[in-house]
Image (tube, rainbow, N blue to C red):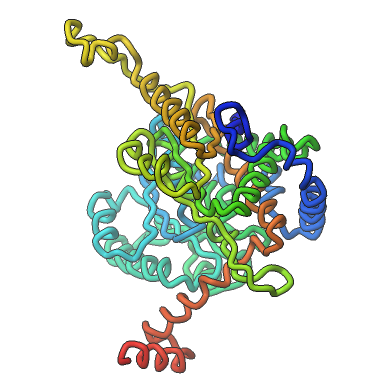
Length: 446
């Protein structure tokens, strides 16, 4: 199981300016209220992600097992919560778990990006999975229409076998398409928002296709959910980390940096960015009061960003909380050969493992941050596997909702995204948006 080291988020001999542990007791009442609200929401079936560890995955595993073995690639067409979790899981495990099948994610409307994906693949060995709950997401639907047109022309006899639809169980345009075309289909649950959906069909289908043990993912998630019910908050990573981030926000630390010391976990930081930003960045609280709250998530990569961002983090504004992701055991590693034993500039590296150097640099960065009085934490993966990833996903999903409760906001909506969507519809000529189109034209001509 993953471990959460929080000592440098609390005042200690090396970081005396951090939040004193006594503050945790001061907010015990708020913590209790937030936990009660979460329990109430779960009973009302609002927080469906809590219940995902118990889901039956047979439909997914049976479908993958029955797929024509010629399909070696899956391209996920989605954006935001329909894409980032797929990328995080696949890229975390593709090397360490020695996955056989490949997963690509087309999550932008960049035409060159789509061309690169389609040109690289053997389309005869590729299946596409369109993921959008509404079936109206402009970015996803444009990709769907381009790809379906290509498949119909290239494989007129069996294009239906090459397209999968993951959408609302009953409603929406794509559910109608499934009935008409006979595409295989999976479900985006009603009670699980997009950015919380990686452990639903949205992320499990591509994971199972690639060869990831999805039962282990859910087992890890269940384990973290159990830990999140621990009454002692100091032994409860999701709630403790949420409370400490909340307290640091109150002190003006409005940037949350996630810094994996692992390329494999870099896309996990991308997944976290959407979860934290979209859930907590709100103009109004639940009473309708303007509060403009939120903490900007930033990703950095160790050791790469020691040479680009750490200068800012140690000597720039003290407005950040930094979380390292550390891996203890690697399935692939190298011993650095002592090529120049006579040269003191490099011979100290000889005989050391590359992973040893990586984690030494992480510890050195932690120490430098403490010397500069910058709060930091460390989420430790004993190894990168499906169970530990499932635990990390559940940890941050619970932490996010809990922090939203402390902030007295709705962590499940995203009203700030809607204006951009409506403007896009207007600009692209969608019916019913004439008024908005005229307003945009006036803006352009001012």
